[in-house]
Each structure stands twice: as structure tokens, then as C-alpha cells.
Image 1 (cartoon, protein in one colour):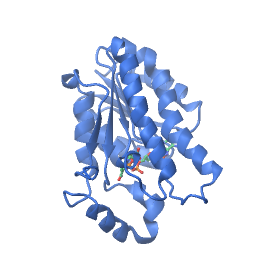
Image 2: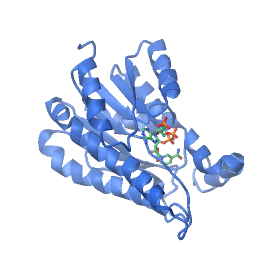
Image 3: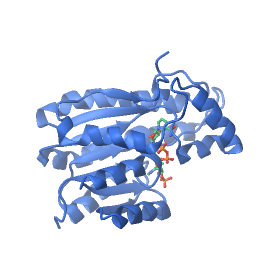
Image 4: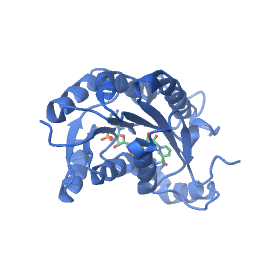
Length: 251
Ligand SMILES: NC(=O)c1ccc[n+]([C@@H]2O[C@H](COP(=O)([O-])OP(=O)(O)OC[C@H]3O[C@@H](n4cnc5c(N)ncnc54)[C@H](OP(=O)(O)O)[C@@H]3O)[C@@H](O)[C@H]2O)c1
């Protein structure tokens, strides 16, 4: 069962920031369980990790399903017998102006972006408590602090995730479990195809122009920060929300 040192669960680990985080953690010797709805993208990322000698497993699951977190935790514990790290990267974003926001869209955002992380942290808590270096990293967004028209529901869930980060950090500190958050600015990942597929080049140009450092970020730049925050070397940091956004939220 225990062919590994530390073990991380990375939701949304098949693509984008989650996949980059999974590759980064695996390079550090962590066994990574990556979670997502699409089997093909999970398999691709697992092959990349295993191809360079890393340890990975994929669990096909919908984080909006309240039964998923227990199933995920059971599968990881069955394979590796421990859980040390959780990276909550899975999320949905759908743009809609006020007046056109459908109830199903509100539910999907809440269930995936908020309830999923809450239930996953709860399900993994007994194992995180057993770890001597338990760490949780939530991935929020600059949209949680900027007022961006048509992103009210997405931004609300990201602001809530930042609140949960601070609240859980205080609650879990007595167990030496650290809880931190990274709030990315615009990063080059497939998520933008879900709202800007009509003119992705134009969307990328507009997003880069919003960033004082003059460009979008890339997923590996985010993964490096996830690595710092989950590493035992970062053991005296908890409850922080770090904007990794090229300065987008400066003004
Ligand atoms: N890219 C940016 O500009 C940016 C900016 C700020 C914040 N963020 C945040 O960064 C995180 C990662 O996004 P990304 O940019 O890396 O985009 P991405 O590549 O689209 O990653 C999102 C991942 O979440 C998974 N996912 C979505 N809904 C899910 C569900 N219900 N159950 C399980 N998995 C689900 C997707 O896989 P499946 O579709 O296969 O399930 C996908 O792998 C998100 O929390 C996002 O809000 C991104």
C-alpha cells in the first residue's frame, strides 16, 4: 500500500493550474491523486507524471456531487494509506449579466467551487490530522476581489473560498494543518475556452492589458507557489491569500 512519502489530492488536476501543480508536487516526490470529470485528460496528465518517474493516480469524479469527496478519500487511502496535501483547483466559470443568471448556474458554481472543497477537506480531515505536515491550498481568483461585470457568481464563490481559507486556517492550526490560498490573475489555461471561445485571441489580449506586468501568467508559475505553500519548509505560513496576478489587483 505505502509506496510513497507524502500524498496530495489535486482537484482539477487533469488540466491547467491543477495539472501543473500535480506535475510539480510529483517532481518533489509526492504521490498525486488527480481529480476531474474527463477520463482522457486525467490519463494524459498521469502519463506525463509517470513518464518522468512520478507517482500518480486518477479519480474520475464530479466535485459538484456531494458523494464524491468520500469516494475520493477512500480511493486514495486504499492506494497509499495517507493524505498530506489538498489542492482545491477544480472550478467552473460561466459569465452572465445580472438579470440573466439562471438558478442552475448559481447552484453549479456553489456546488463545484465551494461545497466541493468544503466536503473534500472534511472527508480528508482525519488523514490530514495524522500527517505531520498537513497543508491545504485553495485556488481562488483575482475575480474574488475585483468587481468584474458578468462574473458576479464566480467572483462570489472565489471570495467565499478566501474567507473559508482564513476561517479553516484558524480552526485547523491546533492540528498543525496549514490552509492557504492563491488568487491567480489571468493565466493561460483551457478555462477561458468556457467563456471566450468565440474570440479567444481578443480575450487574451484584453486580459494581458489588465496586468501591470504586461502579460498573462502560465500554469507553472502558479504551481511553483502551490509547491512553496505545501512544502514542509513553508511550515510557518497559514491563513494567507497570495495574489499571483502580475499586479492585476494593485489598483
Ligand atoms: N486561468 C485563469 O486565468 C484563472 C484565473 C483565476 C483563477 N483561476 C482558477 O484556477 C483554477 C484552475 O483553473 P485553470 O485555469 O487551471 O482552468 P482549467 O484548466 O479549465 O482547470 C479546471 C479544472 O477543473 C476541473 N473541473 C471543473 N469542474 C469540475 C467538477 N465539477 N468536478 C471535477 N473537476 C472539475 C476541470 O476538469 P473536468 O472538466 O474534466 O472536470 C479542469 O481540469 C480554478 O479554480 C480557476 O477558478 C484560473
